[in-house]
Amino acid sequence: MNIIIPMAIMAIKDDDDREYMSQLYIDFYDTMYKAAYRVLRKNDGIEDIINEACVSLIGKISVMRQMERYVLRGYIVTTIKNTSLNHALMNNRRSKHMILDGDDFVDFLPADEDIEASIVYGEQVNEMKQALLLLSERDREVLTLKYLDELSDTEIGLRLGIKPDSVRPVLMRARRHAAKVMNRGGDVAS
Image (cartoon, rainbow, N blue to C red; front, side, top):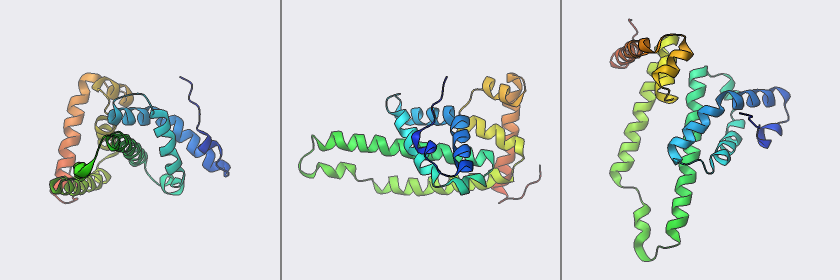
């Protein structure tokens, strides 16, 4: 597949930043595409979403350069998912506004339990990020490949250079290590 670098990246004035973003785009294109598809469940508009997300990532180049690869991957996936969700919500609102009248706008307001669930989820994500930082590189890699990239055992095996039958035990150990780190508040004894 021939990947075309977005104009926003090509317009970056600093040569190092332009090269960095171009390589980042190439390296993570498949990951970005899959993340957008998981939210939208259709191929229409995914290129626009990826390009829009890249525009927002351009402003974060200095921050992204300091991130470890697994953190960077998660950051990019989160940016793509948020951009995809924003597009889905905007399209949904546009279509509903065309047929709504009266007090039907109340349907758009989130329920209190939705807000609380979002806060709890955000706290859990932060705990997991902290736990990931304390894990071995191999554990971080296998968990990232499975749960962020949503790769199959066969794909993970190929990436890690192990047999697909060996992936499940490696994942189980990594999950146990992560659980220990989270339960101990950061102490690593594995």
